[in-house]
Amino acid sequence: MRNLLLAGVAAVLIVPTAASAQSNIEGRVGKLESEMRAVQRKVFPGGANQYVQPEITAPQTQTPVTGVPATSALADLSARVTSLEEQLTTLTGQVEQSGYRTRQLQDQFDAYKRATDARLKALESGPAPIAPAGQSTPLDTSGDGAAATPRPGRTPAAVVASGDTATGAPAAATAAVDKPSTGDPAEDAYLYGYRLWTAKRYAEAETQLKKVVADYPKSRRASFAQNLLGRSYLDSGKPSLASMAFYENYKKFPDGERAPDSLLYLGQALTKLNKPADACKVYDELSDVYGAKISASMKTQIEAGRSAAKCK
Image (cartoon, rainbow, N blue to C red; front, side, top):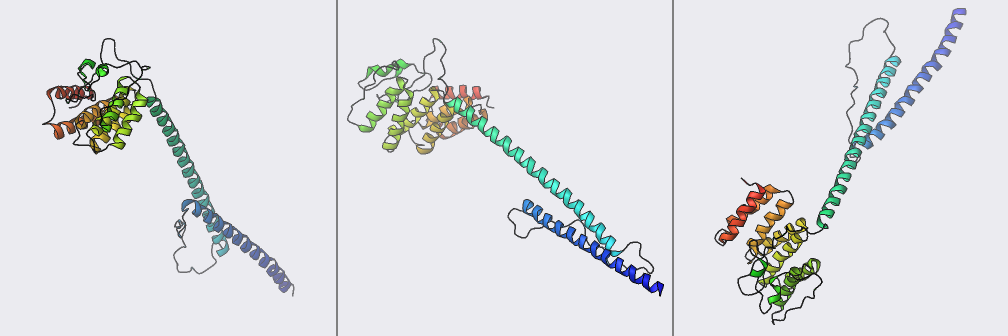
């Protein structure tokens, strides 16, 4: 009778203990599932039922060994849950470290972009380069008796303008610039932009030359105006904008009279931008496309440009 009583008491004590242990494990499993879902949301923000395969898998079914087991099934389950908790902690730490490294890379890229934009802005808005004493600004003529864009190797005195001898040399920046009146609107618009450029009123010249290209794209002066726009940018210390203007002239008006000049100046602008390899490609393009039209003086300028860019 006493033994039956002790067995009953033991059963009463064991059942709550087992129930309590099972409840504890179920709580831990529920917490693990909640944390795993949180980690999955970090790893796969888009969802789409993507899951990381667990590193812990159920053991292979084995032939039961007769006798008393070394540990109970509850103890085995508890050990597996503990191992899973450790794995989840490690995975969570790795996700957080990856996110931190990503934020660092983004911050570094944003800082680099801001610094680069600031340098480009300072470069393009900087003061115009000062020519060495005694060195004249190279100009050219259009060969048709009208004022045209500058070309290296020619002095201001070489420029001839129809009915306007005042454009042979740059005027003072504060001097008045007269608007020509030849009866040809496109010609008058271009000549006015040219006079603004020779007066070193670059901002006004750029506005006027852009207007010529926009208003008279079919005129032969469109090629002249786009080329001179690049020259204005180049002379005012804006090689980046100059390179774009020269390229636009070659792209839009490949048959224009100033397309070869634009490629020549594009090479010079790229050299100023520390892009010698690109400058060499431009000089090659100039020789390949316009070889038959290139004068001896321009060939000399090309060789000088290739030498400055250290082309092979």
